[in-house]
Length: 166
Image 1 (cartoon, rainbow, N blue to C red):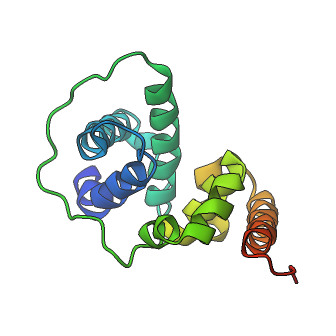
Image 2 (tube, rainbow, N blue to C red):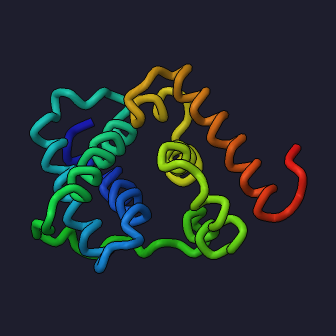
Image 3 (cartoon, one colour):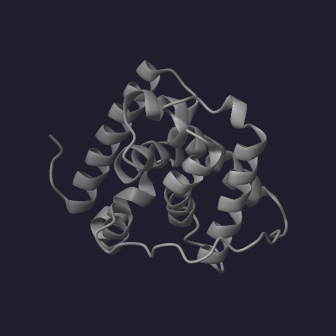
């Protein structure tokens, strides 16, 4: 896959990934555009490092680091506008989680690591090797992390709803 094909295939997914994680920002749409541009610049510079067949998980891993760096820096850096990207769909799992009070409460109680593992698996649709690539761990480690995160979320949800966990 050429870099142009990769950008065409995955730029919107990367932007959505970033947008979902910028809920507290003053302008999450614009910031997501800027950070997506940063991710794509890194992809261009490191194009020989991108694993064939695992482009999107690799881009998510880069996006995680770009987002962490953004949160540490004192001011935003403006980057060229990426143009009109699709709006977030109301059936998007991230919208559903934040619109349901008990789900949102259980979600907030999860550790940041558990939230990220669940986001990558459920919201971004990654599994197995893709999840491992995005998290920078082994496939077995990714499976274990996903299993633990799901269990903790189910327990917290049962606690919030006042029902016994299974």
